[in-house]
Length: 470
Image 1 (tube, one colour):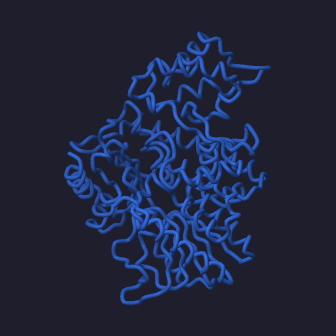
Image 2 (cartoon, helix red, strand yellow):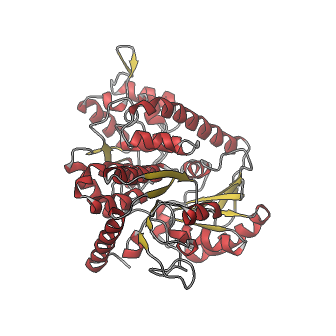
Image 3 (tube, helix red, strand yellow):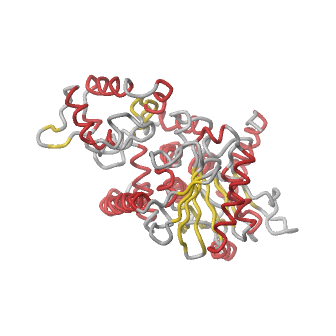
């Protein structure tokens, strides 16, 4: 059901009611996810509470578990604000005073004003799916959290840039090479406030921090013949355009180039890719002009990666400090980012070198056991999906060992989603049938299942995928 005026009016009403409840709280526990979207959301919620002078406690969780539910239900605070988490577990909570700002597919067992079966309590559930929108690309968890913050106080528009970072961190700009839906409205708030500059540019990672050769060679979506994964080819290409790699002994980055140099490089790259791939190479990019160059925070994609590198290595608090303006946390974040890059590189090499990729008729998968961290396996799967090792027209399923079972990450390209694939439903249904649990978005989802059920799980996943798409 697409969003309508009535749906939007209902959302505004629900935001207003939640804002009133939050303003009336004497204390709040903020529970948020550990990725870039979750850390951004947690920061928006924390700043909002601080501005209301409400005592708050902020914690970060990888996922909702029985321990998380127990923590929420037993919390001494008046209110519990759950960000970028919670929608899939609404029926599990057993207390009043809960506010959920999330964008994942909601728990189908939950009805408005109900938590525990037959127990009707006060819960404010703010999720785009409730209002006829798609949470996988129209608005993220930080976006919904920001909308509530703005409803609390319209002057909180200075937090809109964090919602933009969260959306970019969740790749919500990838489908159309720009932010759409409610994200567009939030982006306008950030622009008006002077916190985000929208630019048409190459949609490659590292505009502020990667030397030019690396900036080009790591482009794999789309693959650029002679450039992608070809550092010598990148150097020769830039030399042919008379674009120096160094200036005053320092390696140049993309944003060091003059407008004329950028135009020459962009035109040259566009000539190398198929016409129907050009809109994936060129599109909107989001610069945070108030933040210093060279820190990894001035570009929204890089800012999101800084936050991810903190959260994925059990240091979401450092990401929170950065979002709240604590520049002294950058040194810690740099170490996290270096560790993040090393783990990603090692994980990709492990899958490739050990030939772990396997293919079925309707999916492809790999099992990394304990060799890849559960917090980065989804990133690895997504990156592999856009390399020659994988088929782009099949979803990819990744298994790794976790403390509470086997962690599953599923990724797919958006063209499959446009044909009917919904990985959130796939993961939720398949995991449930083998005694696990799962959920997420149409193109990115996950699950936790019993270790002994992998083959059965794959059989079920394949059946569902084939019925949805093929």
